[in-house]
Length: 272
Ligand SMILES: NC(=O)c1ccc[n+]([C@@H]2O[C@H](COP(=O)([O-])OP(=O)(O)OC[C@H]3O[C@@H](n4cnc5c(N)ncnc54)[C@H](O)[C@@H]3O)[C@@H](O)[C@H]2O)c1
Image (cartoon, rainbow, N blue to C red; front, side, top):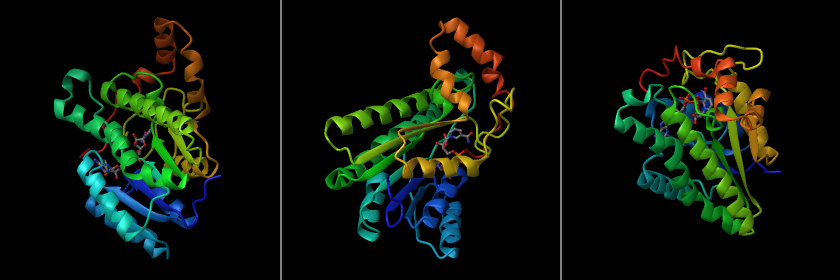
């Protein structure tokens, strides 16, 4: 069991969406919350909201895709708040466009935030965790990290990478004997935060658009219980089983479930 009470918890992308709720829930459990986000105004509001509840929160404007910004912010956190026990890598972006319509810079940005940031936060915070043989590294991946999706060549590929990174880190830590440092990979279907505004589910009973509060709560529970992998809803956990089919049949199954139509109405966040 990972403790949250009294622990310092960095949440990237914690100014909005699920990160913001994870931050509030973590603070309510007695965690010392540290939020890294690029959205300065929303960051200030998120920190103020937690403090208004009489709880501890600190905000750092930090572009997690920029390793120098991450290393600098990590030094500031160590000096001002203390060593970090838990990192929730939650910041994420998507373009939602077909490959040939995605500007090159946007592809780089998606990989910068969704993938490379994991390397920078790991390099910044793991040494302290390994030194104490205690810590937790959480990656908000996605169900899109388990299968390719129409109009997600950037996003889906980045989430596959996020899963591969975190799984490799998990075994690397175990092999090196750092058994007190835990990892959790989270693989949710679409969530109603606004990031994926406009997406649809063909079978909302089987594959509901998830509520942000529900997923945030599940992430916190996964940390408390040291769960290495969490997918939701239940159907997402079956994707690896469907993958046993030949590729053509697998695509037909995904099509039947409406996966490759799900992005047709995508608008996302206006500025993201
Ligand atoms: N919303 C969904 O349908 C869904 C589904 C599965 C997985 N996820 C993943 O869950 C995570 C959170 O998603 P959300 O829906 O809450 O997103 P969101 O858009 O509501 O919030 C993302 C936050 O990340 C911040 N951010 C973006 N770029 C950043 C950067 N370079 N540096 C620091 N912060 C940055 C944003 O300012 C924002 O506060 C993401 O990793 C996302 O890919 C989302």
